[in-house]
Image (cartoon, rainbow, N blue to C red; front, side):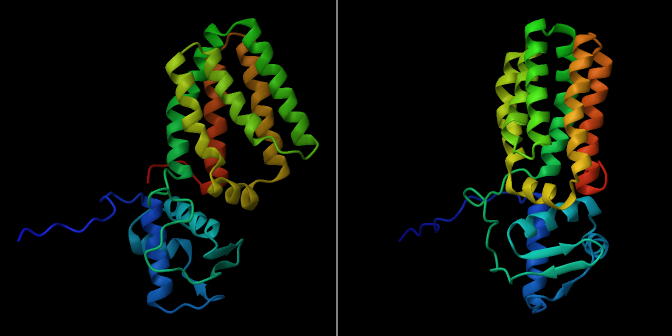
Length: 241
């Protein structure tokens, strides 16, 4: 009789933040750390696993978003509830939680500064005026304490359209969709001050000024500095894992 191999989920390579998060979850279970129990510090976890602190920080954000741990600023890392062994992160689709925020930022750093530079060279006056108006609308919403995340995503897509490169404009929604990922909400709630949110809005104003001046280098620099500042706020530094 020919035996058939049992059906199971396809084999795939774990993402780094996902693997680190799984190791921390396993540590909680293997060491019987109770709810409220303290975990090793980020630096110790990074040294033990041979990875960077930003990589560990991303994994901790994933576990916080999943409601498993809580990181108190300056006060340590604690278990909020005990995980189920081998359970995927709650937002995973078919077991895959998707790219993490650091991976998304690296992709954006490769693409968006060049989009901004090209927009400075080729955007029409109508495109620049529309970006200016949208930037002012987003700034007004932020000042009033209203949500503007979706509008901000649309602004970046409109910038790609202004650059006149159709394949990139079509790709941007997919790239930026992960910005609305639950992990980003955790990051912003923990690390972004009102001053930093205001600075993010000021980036759009500076980019519009660079577009009007047809200054490609300034547009590239503003976008790169913006994305690097986001990475610095969220993870402490910009680096490969």
